[in-house]
Image 1 (spheres, helix red, strand yellow):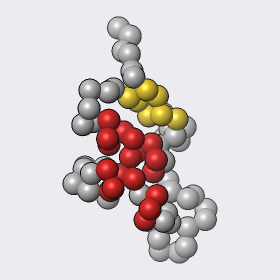
Image 2: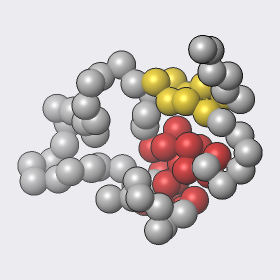
Image 3: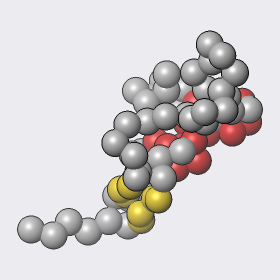
Image 4: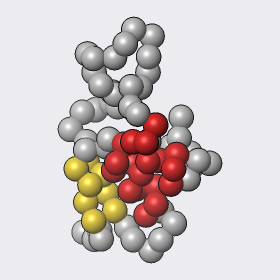
Amino acid sequence: MMKRFDFVAIGCGPYNLGLMTLAEKTELHGVCFEQRAEMTWHEGVLIEGMRMQTHYLQDLVTLADPTHSRVF
């Protein structure tokens, strides 16, 4: 059976994760495709000991819903 989506997000970065978070509170159905098998942030360019190196204004998941399960 074929499933229909209202939108497709390419790459599961901060902006598309924020979009997916907001879409869950609507009747929109989206899908996010990521090329890699596991999530990595800024692979090869992180400061030692850091997990994520994104400016807080680019963290759209937390701004969309700070209690969402995808906020870590």
